[in-house]
Length: 257
Image (cartoon, rainbow, N blue to C red; front, side):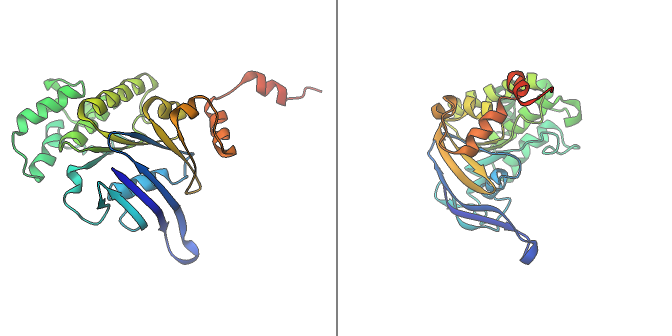
C-alpha cells in the first residue's frame, strides 16, 4: 500500500536549508498498521504530509498503491485520507458537521449523500443530533470523531493519522484509539500512525519505525517494543523517557551531602 524509498525533504535554500527528512525508506502492506515514532522535530509528520500530498516538493519515491504522492493524481483522494492532530483546526468553524461530511461526496460526484452522512456519524458514535452542529458546539473528542468520519466519506483504503489523540483529554484518548481499531477491522483499512507516544504505538500498530533527526534509525515489530528490547541506543532512550518520572531512579541521582 505504501512504498517509500530514499525520501528526502528539504525546506529553504542555501545556508538556510533544513533537511527535514533524510534518505528514509520503508513499506507498509495492505491492511497493516504501521507506526512512525520519534521526538518532536524528528521528521515523522513531514514524511506523512508527503504521502498526503501536502508537500509535493520531495526527492525519492513516495507511492500509495503504486501511484506517486503529491503529483496531482485525482485517484488518490479515493485511496488515502488524513486525520490531523488538532480536530478544531482541521474543521471549518463556519461549516456544520453536515457540510464537512457531505462536501467530499459533492466534489467527487458521489450520490446518496444523506444516507452516507447518517451512516458515517453512526460509525463514529455520533447520532443524527450532531449533524447540523458547528465545531464550537462539540467537545474535542466529538470534533475528532467528525474528522475521522470525514476521512472515511470517500471510502479510502489508507488512513494517515498525525498524532490523532495528543490534543485530547486523557479520558477521551482511549475511546478514539479504540474507535480507530474497530474501523480498521470493519473497513479493512491500512493505517500509518505518527506519534511520540510509544504506548499508543504499542496499542495500535503491528510494526513501527523509529525516526531521529530526519532519518530512520530502527524498524521493529510491536512485540519487540513491548519487550523493551530495541537494537539502538536512541530507541532505548525513548523507552526510558516514555516511562515518565521514576522516584527511585531520581533518588539515586541526588546527593544530600
